[in-house]
Image 1 (cartoon, helix red, strand yellow):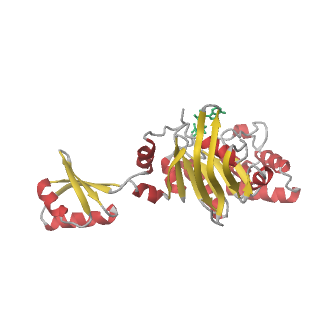
Image 2 (tube, protein in one colour):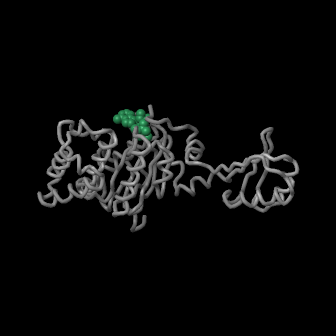
Image 3 (cartoon, helix red, strand yellow):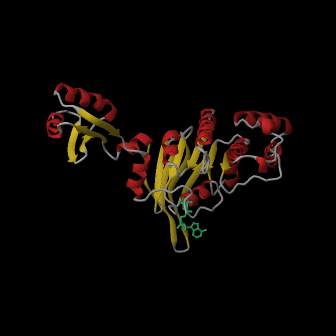
Length: 316
Ligand SMILES: Nc1ncnc2c1ncn2[C@@H]1O[C@H](COP(=O)(O)OP(=O)(O)OP(=O)(O)O)[C@@H](O)[C@H]1O
């Protein structure tokens, strides 16, 4: 493990009776990263996270968070993490300010410091104008923002975010993404789960995908997508067999398959750079192009490829 690792998981195993929920996983999260932990329902994500945040005792393996062993120093671990989980509900009858105030008192943050932090955080998540509103009157997006602000009150080194934008509309999701980026840029490492592949792709520095208790692949979003191989250009022309002949001579064209609707051209390099060259080439050959479409592998493709299943929003 490297000095820059803030979370270290080595050979972690966990069983519930007969059920092998986690079957020996190892991974590390670097300080300052946004790390996403993905997998179908029942993959073992929650079990792993619950061990990381010391809600579940470690059975086998080694887990350290910010240098503290979860078994030997669970209190130290709790001091350096913030948790924003689905189950961590807000008290309906507290105001926005009281929610923050109460949390700060539980964690023993001195009064003046507490006020300063609450002011700052409510400004960040744009809830300062709502400070006297009861949480039960907030929209779903505002509640989520308040939960994030609350999770940050203790200035955690690592923030665990479970499905940060579940059930929110697209505009609110984008704002939450902005907050997550801001928080991360201010120095907090983010460990998150999501069922939205686009979200994982947009936000994450690195991703691990878990399935059946094992990590099936880890890497940056680009690395994961690149493992699926090539970008594909879908092409319809007035002369497909002529086009095929010209394009097969191009360095970046790996293979071409035909279908009644045109040609599928597999590209060995970045398709967005190959596409203009393909178009030029066909023009020079005097072959008229009817339509052209570039498809790059998406994080959804990655997920389906490595787990053989599709995530459904909300799970179940
Ligand atoms: N308390 C428990 N008792 C018995 N079995 C459990 C318990 N918690 C989890 N499991 C089982 O362990 C396996 C892994 O579950 P886990 O909740 O870690 O998966 P997950 O990836 O978090 O799924 P989800 O996306 O649905 O939250 C599942 O087979 C689950 O049924």
